[in-house]
Image 1 (cartoon, rainbow, N blue to C red):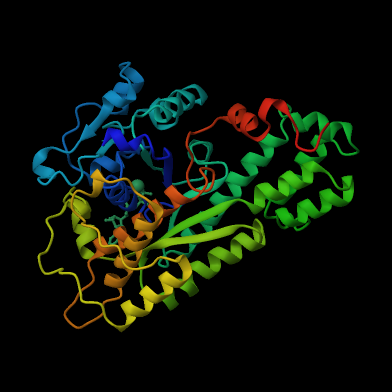
Image 2: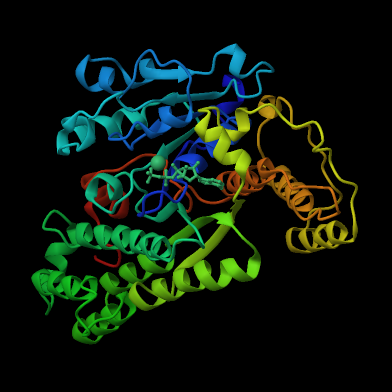
Length: 430
Ligand SMILES: Nc1ncnc2c1ncn2[C@@H]1O[C@H](COP(=O)(O)OP(=O)(O)OP(=O)(O)O)[C@@H](O)[C@H]1O
Ligand SMILES: [Mg+2]
C-alpha cells in the first residue's frame, strides 16, 4: 500500500452542505470507506460539537480530537482503525478516522484562529493519500476556512429540502468572496497595484460588500462587479485574474435522498444552478458527482452505528447481465472517453492497485449499469450509488489538476497569497 501511494496526488476533500441534516455525515463516512479501497484514507470529524462520526460509526475510540488539543498527542496518534470484526476481509484496511470529542468542549467546538491553524497543519501532515472532512452545518469561518479556495469540495444537498439547495450555493459564494477579500487585503501584492491605479482597494472592498449583500440591488453578482470594475480601471491584470478565479472555480455536488431525475432536477438542481447564476456568476463549472438514493438500509446502518458499507452484504445483489440500457451506456462512455473495451475489476481488495483514470471511468460505467438495472425483483443496492460517486471522484482525483477538486493542503490566507502570487509577483506587472 505504501509503495504505490506515493505516486498518487494527496487530496483533502471536505463534505459540506451549509444546511443541517441533509446527509453530510452519511456521505462522508461511506465515501471515505469507499475511497479507502483505492488508497489510504482518513476521515476527520470536524463537526466537533455533535460527535457526528462516532454516532454513525460505533467503533471503540481510544483517542480523539480532545487528546490532540488537550493532551498534546499528534493527530496521527488519534486515528482509529477498524477492528478485524468490523472488516473481516480487510476490504477497508486503508481506512481510519479521527473522532470528535465525546462531549461538547467549547474551545474545541468553536476553534479560535490558533486552534484552527494547529488543526489545519496537523490535517495537512496526516499520513494518508485522501483525507475526507465531515463538516458541520453553517457557513461560518470554521467551515469556510477548511474548504479549498479554488473549488467547492463535495457539496451535499437534497431535493427534499429546498433551503439546503440554496445553502449549498451560498457556500460557493462564501468561498469565492473569502478568496477575493484575501486578494484585496493589505497583505496582498494586488493591494498596492490597485492603490496605484485610479481605484482604491477600499472602493473595491466596498463594492465586494455590495455584491455580497443580497439585499443590495445595485450589484447582483460577481459578473456585474467585474464588468463595473473593468469600466472603472480599464483593462488590467487585476480584472483578468479575478475573472479567471471565478471562471476556473469548480463546483461538485452529490444529491442525497435522490427520488428520480425529473424530481431532482426541478426541486434541487435547477434552483441550485439558478441561485449560483443569479447571485454568484454564470461562469462557474458545475459537476454532478452522482446521487444517493433514500434507503432504509442506509438509515438503519447509521442508527446501528455500523454504516452501510460495513453492513453485511445481502447475497441477492448479484451483478446483472448487460441489457439494452447498459449497452447504450457502454457505447456512450466509449464515445465520450475513447475507452476501448471494458475493464473488469474485482471489487475485493482493489487497494493493491494504483488507481488510474481509465479504470475509474470503467468502474463508473459498471456502477451506472448496475444502478440502471430495473428488471423486476432486482432492487437497486444503495452501495452502488457510493461506488459510482467514488469512482467518479477517483477519476477526477487522478486525472484533473490538483486545484480542480479538493485541495492538497488546507491553506491559510498567507499561503493562498503565496500560491496566487509566487514570490510576491502580480501577473502582468513589470
Ligand atoms: N440516503 C439516505 N437514506 C435514508 N436516510 C438517510 C439518508 N441520508 C441521510 N439519512 C438520515 O438522515 C439523517 C441525517 O443524516 P446525516 O446525519 O448524515 O446528516 P448531516 O448533514 O450530517 O446532519 P448534521 O448537519 O446534523 O451533521 C440521519 O438520520 C440519517 O440516517
Ligand atoms: Mg453530520
